[in-house]
Image (cartoon, rainbow, N blue to C red; front, side):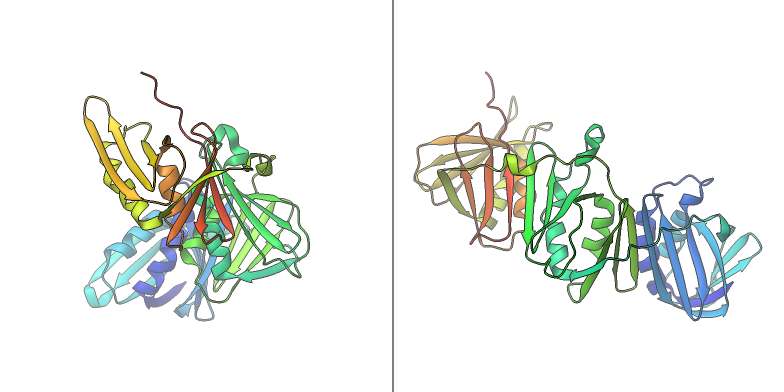
Length: 368
């Protein structure tokens, strides 16, 4: 096996593949990338045994063949050498990576490609959705996925079809993010599934805003493809919480505020947050929010911003991250926060309303 290509072209794809690899154990084939050169293209594959990644890049093939190399080391080599044309050559159980113009040469152990695991086949019912729309859906929910492995059924994004709508939901038990888009016309019904965030992060980071993304679902797997990329993942088993039961109704109080001003206020007070709880306070009075944080025995930070509010004075307390993360991907200039009192969940929505919202539970009042 031997090929030549531009280092920058190869590095981009190898870096993505390296993000997929879970194990850095040099004795595990899952630590390796699969490389196959043929017909002036290089196929690159990587897996952590749950999420699978495949892409192709143009190369000049001198001698076709396939091999696997340690992904982390291969990526590290490409990161180190300068831009220019490199040569990749397999020799027995070694590969040589050379850049003659820079007098650079690396030798890396390899493992036969036959030991690399096969990837599952995609389902037959493939449907396409606009890339920009599916990326927007992922962006507005993925931060709310739980990292509590004891509640594994919340370690992914819930995905379902309801009439002509596609819905994504994520929750960690203290907050919930939901987005619903009318994209499902002509798509066959499918059973609701829970998608691991790792495959969705690749889509969010790597898919362009033009064109379409193809999806296919089987009983155990999801398959996603766009451009030269083919991804698949084992679905998360279990029953996702009934999210409809936690959506508040009849929230009679609200305040409307400039989204960027609120983000700036959170940033201003964040240095004085409690290091463990990340607690921040909203003190609401007529047309004003005082955003502040305090850490006992150290001090306090406070910033006042204007808002639209006409209720009684009230203080609300939240984990700062639960407010900050939903605000960042919003494109609206203003956000509306609806609530009932300081002990019940709030609902955050862009203004004007769009196709998504976020529910956040307040923190318990401090006891003195």
